[in-house]
Length: 343
Image (cartoon, rainbow, N blue to C red; front, top):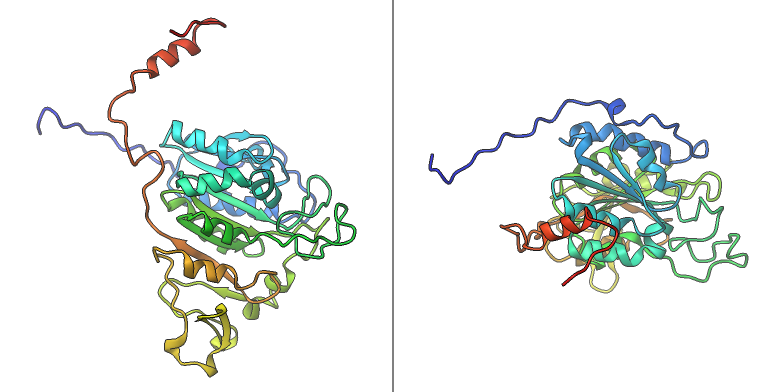
């Protein structure tokens, strides 16, 4: 071995169970809330992610979902409304060895936080972003949100919302997010697999979790996620396979030049006409078409990984090989008195 070569000892990853990732805080959401299942899914998935609790940070904003940092036995930040992606970006850039999770609702991340979310995605910051979409403001008691369907009657839209809802996956793909997926709170195993895939991805991973709010928007996705409806309404995305669903694969998806992704009866088309799912397509246009397949969430809806591509991670395009000259100066200033003079 030459004198310039160095060796590093791999950091040992201890074996953990869900209990190791649970904090000592009492979990408090409304009885029956989908947040309980999502929390359990993440805690069950983390032991398989190859991370240590002391190297994991959970960042939340404001809202029901943003209580996650209290319930995770990790480092955590409870930020202010909409700012979780910005705070998490700072954490991830300050220490690239950390696993950083961003937790937020559709209101938190798509309304006041929409700007921060877009920039975290387009920059490809190494974050795992979980957006819980219940199409309502839950913590503030039932106002319509950026994902609420048109005509939604709420306390803040008594005559029905006029707004066209945002489709979170379309927003993420429009920002060129390198990992985009969807899962739902009625299938814990599917959530676990999607969460593990998202964390494994290097760069900005965005996961939409369809979630029920049984107090202010009950049965939000029952037409899709109820067990009796799943075979007909959930379109599983499997890498490298033609997109089929329904009893005996009787339904499928094709690309239409005029209408984009369209559901068809497989008996009416050839096998070669069916869209073969490829999450690794460099261009997001096909994934975007799939994200628009059920804009109102009342038609067959794709579920799984829409896009997973490798691109340079923010902060690693121009790696710093030496300590910046100003770093020690900044450290000295932070540990000095309450005032200082900058030349």
